[in-house]
Length: 330
Length: 209
Image (tube, rainbow over all chains, first blue to last red; front, side, top):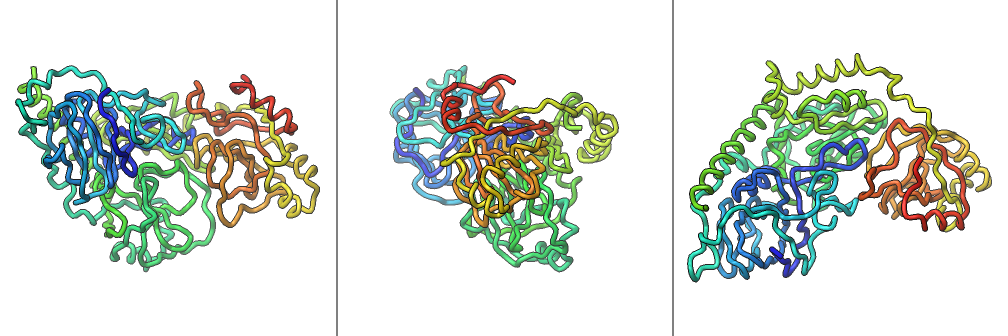
């Protein structure tokens, strides 16, 4: 036993950084929507390998700790509380057995991550812990978490209980992740041209880059449907289906766009106008229905540099977390 | 080319998806930069690798003439749209089945759902367009959409005209090979009765080809 779901949330699933190597079989990578937050959560609790984290939407689960644990909460701000006290996100926190974690209020963002030291111990499916809801496989029994589910922890190689002070349910460790520019200018989403960008009418190219587009309520882990000025393609011919990816912006027959998100299908036949750059997928993943998006065109070199910078930052965080943790635990 | 790439993997190669007339390659730019330190972008470096793969991959390497034979029950209740396909084609249901089982199909692409195969060409007489809106479709359902035919691996909404159902597990997440069919395979369907369908289903796993 490790944690038990007392009350399920609307969509709580185990995720990692995706199931790669099976797209040619139609099995999509899936994985955490906000991979920066998911990675940071793991690093904060000393998980060196990308083990499973819990991805939650609002309303999120109520969780009972059945044993002492080192945890971190990152991503969206659902005002996390341990028993009756609010705790900060992006910090390592030691939690005492029998404490309840709950999330009373949606303050910011769309996806919140919970990592525990040692990770959640579930059998991998095709080399990944990500939940594939359609296939009914991966993660916790291939489904979202329900009342009474017990999620065991993986191997715990640190003695963390010594950090708990008498009479306190938890102890916040002093260091935290500075998310820096990651979630700044949340509505400004950089894109690069897609294969069918040139098929857009010049006026529509301009419209796409100069207008706001609203995220439609029919938006989920598969894709965000956008609402705004209808765009026009110059050709009418149907395309042959081909591979698509997390971040692909497609033009639907009515002239509206859809941005494919983590649970997208492996192939698609709609025109690919653009691709959201990987470095901006985390902030896109934190937008919600009725939020707006402004697309800004950039080039591949800039997109790669931004992703590299993000990855470097995570590497620095990895080393820093490791050193700090080793200083306080034996 | 996809096969060649899988045999000559570069580090940072994550996935590849073959479409009808395309190959989409997914890679991690961070790994490419770290391992190969290209002077330009990782995109350009990968593009060069793909051009090389395109030159070197022998087309004969993917030829596979083994035909995978797939049993299909074309009887009710597994064939909800067989009557309307027959009406569209001005043929009897039996003639539709004969035309559908008469062709050897190429699998052009796997996509949409785990293990969903896009195959064809379907005889033009029974190449019915897909439905205006998707309806719930059961796993194993065999459908037609224009000149394509395919098998639904999972229960899913779908717009293809369903004319039969196979008892084979097209997708079995916990089998050694979760997906039965591959792009490049050749497939032929053969009809079975509803009684045979039941017998197939009582077998726990797919027979070995």
